[in-house]
Image (tube, rainbow, N blue to C red; front, top):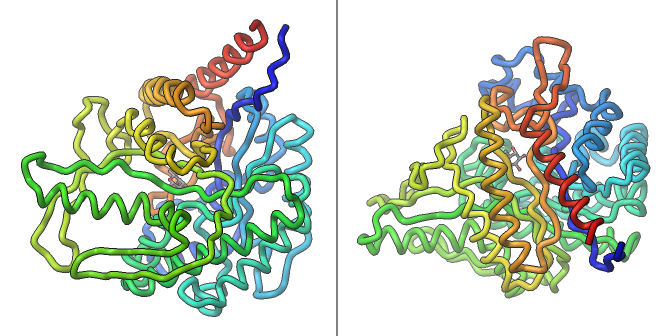
Length: 429
Ligand code: FCB
């Protein structure tokens, strides 16, 4: 057997704290009690979630069953700093035990510091559009890193900044519920500044670990090939949604340019403080120009590739994954697919989705040596933002009516076999 010197490709699954842990009070649960999401009333088990906070040891056994060698998860800021400046040691201790256990199991932790949620005090006292947010995030990061940073080889500072900003500062769907592009730009700027602070803090504790940002990427396609306005608006949306943060690292400046709406340009010393790009890829969207000053476009899903839609109405478009990875190749950075998955009640559809996406992934691995890992979203069924528990993303089903029992789906078995086969093939060469 020839011992390979290449670093092993990371095969994993991805989760986030709030979506599986249960038993927490944060900005989202406050938002729900104000009736701002419909999900709370629909879900009597809301506060319990999938109860991962109590069942994490059993859930980690599921990771092992899946054959994976890495696990992406997040810490819940509201649990760690329930009051501003007051840190809960016991929560940090539990996260520390979780990291230890993963290492014992031979599973590399990839830890996300910010995955959409905040402590209840955050938006009032240190909102993202104020520079105070950078300090607040730095202090939280310091506490986490002091406790577990020495044992975590991969950090994501912020998950999908753009998705969160659009929901919190443009669509008013997430707290703090603004509809203001100028505040959004300031908040984006501060989030990137917070990333840099966190990068320095993490590296000072653990110089060898890798620190990145996970972005959500959407393949946009103009609705009508013949319409130059559709094309133009598509390009604008692409450069804002997909490339704004990537370009900020290239240019050391945040630039948002949308004719008649805004032209924001502000230098920022990002200084290449980013070791990898995390790629969260789910779907393609079609874009149509619309005569309106406020939103001069419409976005919609269409089943152009014939692969159908997910239960959330998203177009299944596997080739998009390859495209997104190609967009990022010129950055020269290592790439991890940090999320990719499907909400469906029909597991055969999930299996088909996986086969299609894994085949595109294999192509990308062959052509891009910078591609280092793939994390399936998600380990178990969980709470989906704005939707609740009916979206089923898990490789394990969670039976909410029967004691939250976890059951491996055929698609999960397929993923485990897929990884096992790869490992066997590698061992034979
Ligand atoms: C992503 C989020 C993740 C999950 C998936 C379905 O945008 O990062 O938490 O909800 O969508």
